[in-house]
Length: 277
Image (cartoon, rainbow, N blue to C red; front, top):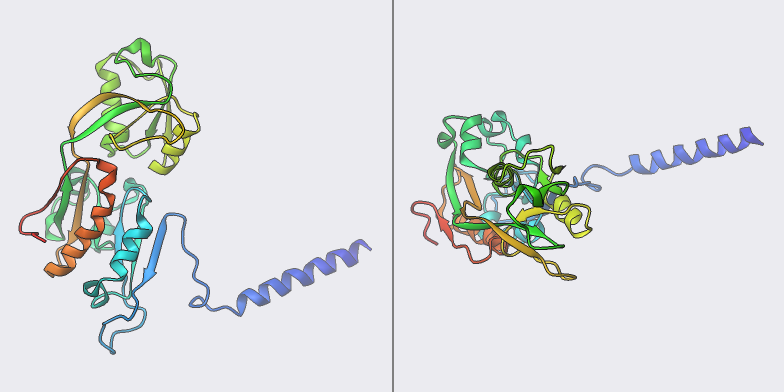
């Protein structure tokens, strides 16, 4: 009986493998948890252009609005003329390498300039600054009480931070604030996260006591208590490959990135240089 059961299980496994093998990669395309993509409808690319032509690739630091950004860009004629689709990723910034920059693996990158030039000193031979948000207010946030800027207040509290050491809002600024009030790491309990989505979810669930964020951060279930940490932080800077120099394409990308504006409530964007759209 046991042998028969095992034989039956083996037949099932072989059947599953057979069914899966019948599907080509073009029929079944699996994405990654950190990625969203879409194909451009009615592409205007020349007929000689291969059907698997390169996607427009954007590297962000958050999954917020990723689907909407991709969808908006896939519908733009300026994108259809050059690309077969749009791919929006939100891998941690620290995973970006110098090779990614030299090989121009991404068309648009959200990151800090000092971090990128640290990887590649001649960054601007490859990428232009496209758009930036500045004078962004950052707060200590709590669902329990108004944060007090003393070492005693932070003692024993679970503080959510991003593992990304280049993140101003969720790593550098809170650690600088804690140091300013003489709160040392042994006094509080740091909890590190790989991305902002996981950080926010943990905060909402009450698994951490404090985190930092902008004025737009809110909870539908309970009030969010705030204490100002910095009122002039740079919220975001976006870089674009120099090769993508068509004004309409750049303006359409800027338009799509403006969907992220609610993350920096009340902060104006500044297209770089001659990017007047």
